[in-house]
Image (cartoon, rainbow, N blue to C red):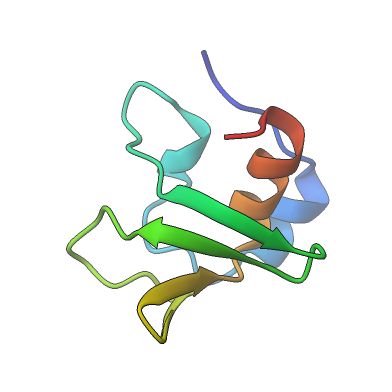
Length: 79
């Protein structure tokens, strides 16, 4: 199954270094979302990729994500 996001969302996700791998659940191991902070950004429990994502930043003992595509996937599919 492929996840769908709006074309506008993909256009503003300009720093994706993974070629939108998150849109295909067969090749994607998603970061586990801890909570959504009012749609501004997502706190994630664990960062699954060893590579650095340009949208993921450390915060205290956690990480937060500001990726527009990841946010829309979370909002649409609750993943």
